Image 1: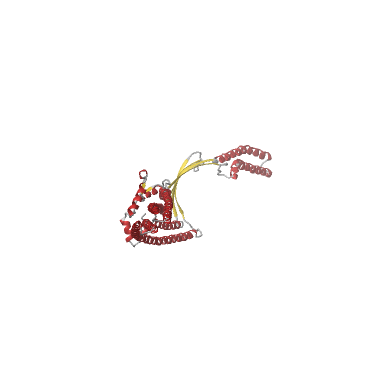
Image 2 (image 1 turned 120 degrees about the vertical axis):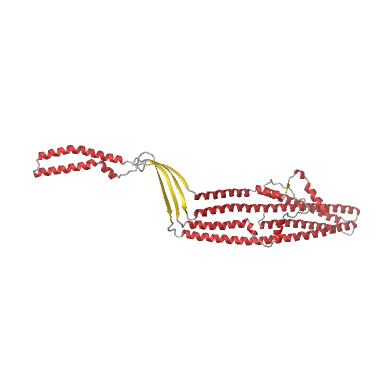
Length: 501
């Protein structure tokens, strides 16, 4: 029977093989890693993180900025007030006019005292008036020219320059920011590892599910062929009068049931292969050919090192550090620590060296002369926080608490990974035992089927007994398939738990 099953499986696998590409598990893995969109996004995220890290390093370097501007004012910038302008505009009037009035009063007083005759006082007043008038005009002109000299003519102002700022001490903020950027790059890399692991785990499960259903399809076909052979024998015996019509109906029901089982399994095979194609980035095709679907017995996983880890080793200390989940949680802890340092830097003095070169028109250092002039400056800026109402203190406390939470979460996940490793070890051990037991049962079922067929031909076994033997043979063979797939899935699960995918 084993040879018959092998022939059926091989025949089913080779139909149309010349026109189809065979996909092994390794090839499916490679296609999935190549075509998975989430992995492509993660790779782009790594590029973003790398450039972010490079950008953070530039904070150590001087910052150079170029400035340029133009301003139009509705009024001129005035160096004199309106009262000062009015004073200068009436300089002659205010000076010589007041002097002329005072002289006129003095001449009148002298004339009243009899010191001067009225005619003499009048002549002297007329004479001074003739002199004071041009002096007053000249004084007013001088005042006007003074006002003109103080005009800035600054309705249009042009300016440009270069400013250089070099951080000297920022309280550790720049280093913390750089460390956070470096950790961010590690996060992106670990995220790729996590998604890669999940993709491979999904591909392995979909692949072995498709193989399991395909082998069950071949088994169901073989069982249907046995039932058809029995049906033909029973029909012949009914014609010869050594079997009843009831026996024939029992076998016909078994054949129809086998056909229905094949149809259901074929639908499952198509769906499983379509799911595998979706993971691999292939067209949704339920007819792809898998390399293991034609084998009678699945080959063992070719990895002695993996076998040693999964079977022999009982010490999981350090193995779970290979898990990307733990590395991501460690990244979260490190990021939280650096964030605390960044917040603390806000309480520290910040020192910057600043320098600049500028040009302006009008010339601010030469009476607003209408020409471009340049100047340079250098200095140091010190910023010291005095009072923030305890804001940074509360932020530091919150950041420390977040670090503790991340540490606790990492410890919790580490314990769960240890449990996952042990569970998968037990699963693998149990699956191997089931496989060994299934092979023993299969040997007994094949011998039972052989005896039932011989007994039926000799007339000492009934149709029902032969059908029961066939069903037992199918069940035993089905158990082997399930056990083989369970071993493969347990190996995959353990490999994932150990961070080996």
